[in-house]
Length: 114
Image (tube, rainbow, N blue to C red):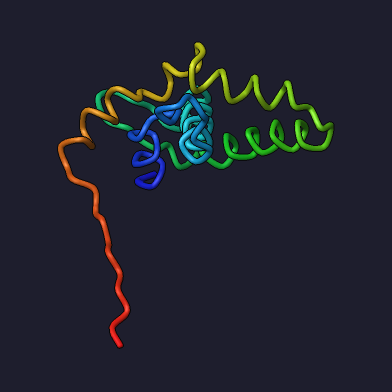
């Protein structure tokens, strides 16, 4: 979930309007789980570990159906719902961004010395 929160915090689109795949994937996952009641948000995200497996399975079935049928419109509808549509309310992007922006992200610089 921490990985997802980091991507959601970065936004769903680049400055030029291109989609950010990992951010959108995380929004679909989190939004779907919240909508199903496997995760609830009451100021904090709380995972219902008894409900989560069924919610994961339901999302997997949706995605598998879309992929098996080559349903590009269905895939786009799923993304749109949780990134810019009514399902985005389940993601709580503003709350995630507000809380995580307080903490700087790690940045690593690597160098090779000969």
